Image (cartoon, rainbow, N blue to C red; front, side, top):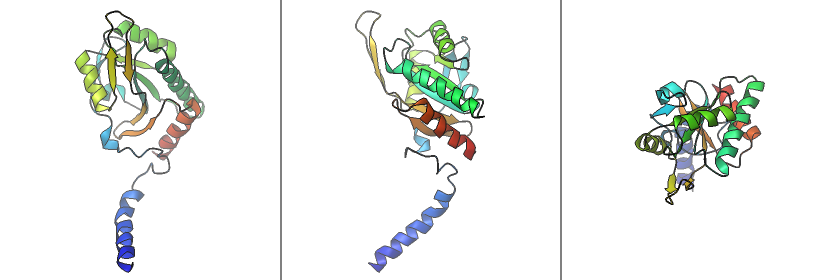
Amino acid sequence: MIKLASSFAAFTLAAAPALAQDQFADCRASTVGAAQIGGPFELVDDTGATVTDADVITGPTLVYFGYTFCPDVCPLDAARNALAVDFLAEAGHDGVTPVFITIDPARDTVEIMRDFADVMHEDMIGLTGTDEQVKAAATAYRAFYRAHRSGDEFYLVDHSSFTYLMLPEIGFVEFFRSGASADEVAEATACYLDAL
């Protein structure tokens, strides 16, 4: 028993510096490792310009993968993220950007992404690209998707539905499920921003 207690104490003391160095420890709701989500991408923005993650993630950013033809979760999550950005601005946290990356580049053209982003939020950035570019971005963020092409334009796409909070020079810090409210997203995001 003494050996077990001393081993636990040694582990606790060894882990303490790493735990103390996590400036976001009080904010974390998930246990997903930061190195596992996010990474470089090259896509096309809603003006037609080719952009990279460094061009897009210039401040706190809420990144979502979805598609504009989505009949349910995508528009709701995009609207929720837009509302969270507004709540954050009202609380003094300006500059949080909502980003919507399509997983359906065949239908989500630059024009469609521009219209969608403009309707959702004045600061939303809509991103599309080639199939390869979108797949690379989705893979970097561990975002799942699979199109059910039925031979007509009305096919659906199965996909994960997480919003990723990204901070420049830090990367991924948190994710939000579809069930999270705008208040919850804003409150959690504010905690991270206050801890910077």
